[in-house]
Length: 354
Image 1: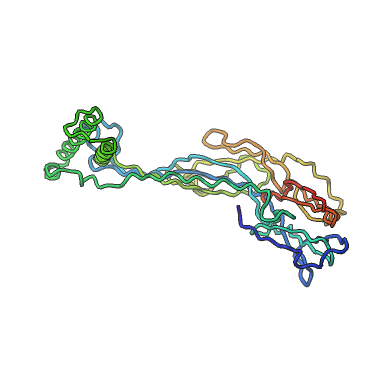
Image 2 (image 1 turned 90 degrees about the vertical axis):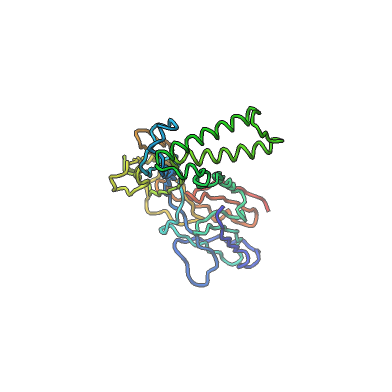
């Protein structure tokens, strides 16, 4: 949960002895007025792209992989390539500088507890410390590869190291790999000359043999290192049809939208005109605590000849602004309000009698 800036207005005001309405104005107030400035959010569509960079390094005996170990299609050339693993679509809120409000508390008013995000976006009223918010589940870290990196040459015998040609070395290393496999099979069948005394010793012996086999085999097959990376792409929603959201290159990963080296991924956004917004007559004025009523957008994301996302998302810019009446905040009851910081819309409104 984002760190919140909590503004307790009660400490700034006189004790309640009469009801006075809360006055709200647009813009940032200056002077000696007591109150709090907050901002409504506007929506951005966020694409989270998870990709993996693969780095292949050929082994020194890669040319002999098929001859001695029957490993097919082993390349002798280094290679770096990318794979696109997952794309997630969501909306996020950023401060809308055109919708800044100041809640002015008159003397003897009922002062609410207003909670703001670190960006100044209104989060809640009379719901301190983020009550009512569901905490995001902690991200599960990807299991680290604990396989130790070893130098395969540390397992080579004197005979192998003294070989007079690369081809001869490759042949001897391959024979050593087959000997290791035979030793593993003998241990598993209980036919080894020196059998371990218990399961723990057996595991240690098998682990050591597996480590040697892997290291020597990689002298033929090469190594493949994987580096997962996450890219975040923000788009300001407007009606659009098949515009490039981003480009992905198998050779370079995420590239600029105008870089033709990458394959384009397209996005279409349609305003669903929900809710129906009445035409402005010029008479609407600030009256109470402002909040957004976000509209709905139909969003389609396509790429690689398939549809990746097809659904509706809330979009503040396609909606309107409404107000919580000041009379709600009086001494007879406590109004608790929770806002969606991504859209500025209401999540819930509760009333408690005092």
